[in-house]
Length: 185
Image (tube, rainbow, N blue to C red; front, side):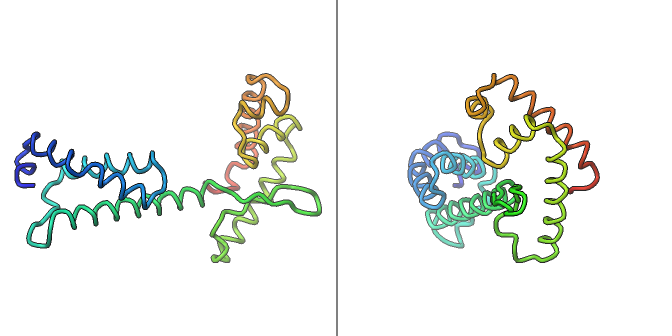
């Protein structure tokens, strides 16, 4: 690590070759995703090269320190992914009265103020969706509530891909105008 702090690329290369498999496998164990584990591994070694002074030999062995860095980085990624999923992913449910889609972000049921605000926004979004032409509404619902890609929507609706893209774009523009200033985010 002293050699790396002195910007010795050969020392870094040796350290990388010695520990890359261990860092990757530890990351993969925590993250359960090969791509995320690769990204985390790369990030860890980039940080190690940029800030080698973060390892302080008096506090313990290098390997123990490295494994704590790996664990912390992987846990941070899990937390960030959880936050992203809660923001982006919506649980799709059906309202028995009018068969409308309800968007309830996962894990946010503990905050009554946030729940009330989300409910109000759901009502506004539902209303705005009903004002769209049926073709645009269907394309948007398949994309955002069912998670289909534009290609999958084109196949499901027996429509050209360009038509589906246009319907989604126009529908989003109309929703944006309709909801401007009424919905956060």
